[in-house]
Image 1 (tube, rainbow, N blue to C red):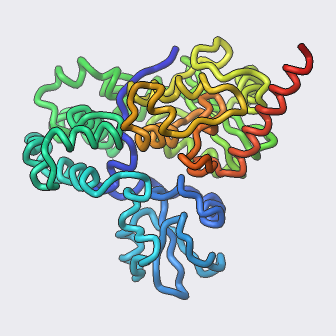
Image 2 (image 1 turned 60 degrees about the vertical axis):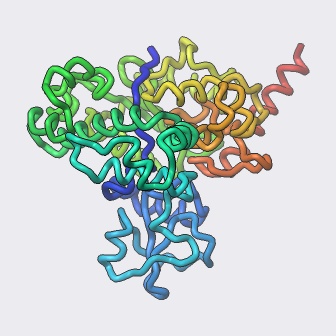
Image 3 (image 1 turned 120 degrees about the horizontal axis):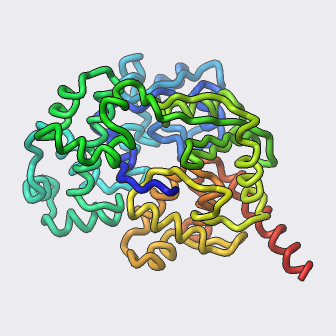
Length: 382
């Protein structure tokens, strides 16, 4: 079963809170060496010999490992005595991911006010120098949702965060801005995937099994719920992949279960090697992935791209009937939790460059090459 739910793009939340827990240091260092833009906002690094802190993608000369420390937020780096790099401007990382200044500022204004009475769209638009209509269009183009849906998603995220931090259900729901308990219970499947009381108990009933295997792309982690595949991650070490899984699913009961997932792993590897076409409704890879309606449109369109071929973000946006939303398409690709199964490696920049891949450009190149090779073999055998 494919789970549809509204989730908020991570980049739009950075103005209100610190980044999530740091990836492990090995993962951070490898991302820094690759200048991996997918890790912007997940950590910042400082260099003691220069006294500055930077984004992982900073184009400055690579530092020596012994001089580097990692931080969960710009504030943490500055508290340690470092100043922001003037080259990569680490405090403006949302712009690096594609958010324009007006949209980033609007998110901050919506998020910084009393949750029971958020400012009106007209008021926020006036403060960022746009009309309400123009701001709504920019939200749709850059985030894939309108301001109203953004606020709904943000409220749900505040509620989930409060429960994870140990607040009572009543305090969490009123603190998040829900007017009554009935509202959140009526929509608990969308907000949490379970009832609030269950979620508050650490996700009792939300069990995720996972395993890791070797592949031509490094280590592969496959994680499933009873409904289907919840994540397919690519990386260099089991430790880093497991840490990413626990960070992305902090309230779930997570257990390693190698034998039970053998069939799922074979199905995932078949897609990673291009032996089977990607398909969101395939019986051997049922998905339990949460995404917005817009994200699902993008992900389904990705599976329609022939194996080994690519389409630009703009082309994908036009094919789903949203020609103005190329940046939001890129963001939907970046939030994909199922590498290979949802083939975001087939999306490229307007100039055809293979950039912006969460798992690294080298893996993107190998995935496309494997698909072309498999397709060639199929054609020659006909």
